[in-house]
Length: 548
Image (cartoon, rainbow, N blue to C red; front, side, top):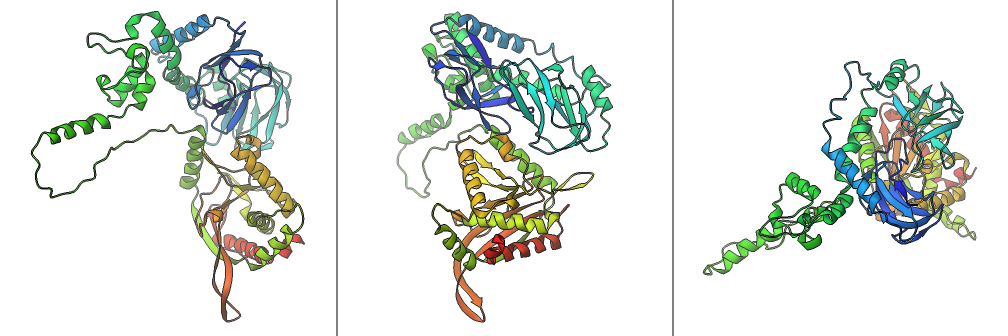
């Protein structure tokens, strides 16, 4: 019997997902536990495994396409099984939702809608598997009143497949627990509330029960409904093509086009008569409209008219060529990066301090360390270690800002920025101050490899208290970075440059490196940042002190 696999909600804030890559193709055998696809969420790219076995009969979302949570992702069943009824049912459901948008509009928030205070986050029961309808809280790892850091495990949740750890994507204080241990609740029901200490959440709890919250639940309902119509064209087009010949060809000048392609063309102001359809018998489908560029038609007309005129003396020169602009959809990772860095740049008052470090001793020390068999330490590893030790001496830099208080972290977790194809990720080296140089090097190498291969987990990218960004390997001598909130500072590391320097009154050849510290002025003052850099400089110029 065929089983429908829907787009899962892989994080509590996920509203839609992008299929980054299919690991199985139609016709392939699927075993329980096999990885079906890599799916981009708003947090990370994650592997999605199958909880069923059989043959992959249908793929509902192509690679690179975006689809809302709960939309048709794939169908698994017996080889050769007829799934036309399932596909027709999916198409009918999409058309029904598209035809009745007005029925949902009157059910907007009442005049008694409860507003969620700033800084308060309502955490809903997540859908941790594609078939999960409800979850049971096996145990709470945090209690009401406990502080919660981003990446902390909130609870163990029992799904219809397994018991899984559920981590927090927010930080604050656990203000309310909506489901007691051992109790079950449907997906999207109130699981917990996190926010500033002392916040009264009684109105939020009551509003959630009555459905009168002014944010959160309404957005979850409205956004997917709109996108379900736009992001499920394949099923509609396939079924329209098989229902009648009217939508699969053109005759007598009539243009045949799928409803979705027609809507996209209208929104973009494109004349359908200029588009050549790639569907059955020339029918215009979604991809034809999205891939259409009008420049070719515009260039041909002037060229034809010019050939019919009498040559004249050339007085001006112009470059002849085709102008084109391609549109590439923003990945979920790029959206998350844009949101995070935008919030940081426009909310935290940045200021920058820079120094130049003599790297002669560091170069000599690294050479000696790497001469030991099976040992490899980079300059970046030395910088990360020096930062961790400097943070211990300057705890004001190892802080986070909140509206009510400055949070001093007793632990030191250094994030190391790593460039990947889709953008930038920041794996976190936990308890960096307690690790040796070789341990830091091995950890950074392992996390960076996972990040580039899209195998890194969200937990390995959360919880940093300070960040290091190094562009020295690209020859960049000096630059400034945007603070990776909730950190209070980020260090930008440039290249080691050979140049003339003055030592003991003499001009000699030296090797120096520029570093820039970006600080959040709400938590770190100029003098504090300067003292941190002085300590960092001392460690880097005298590496033996980091081994003491």
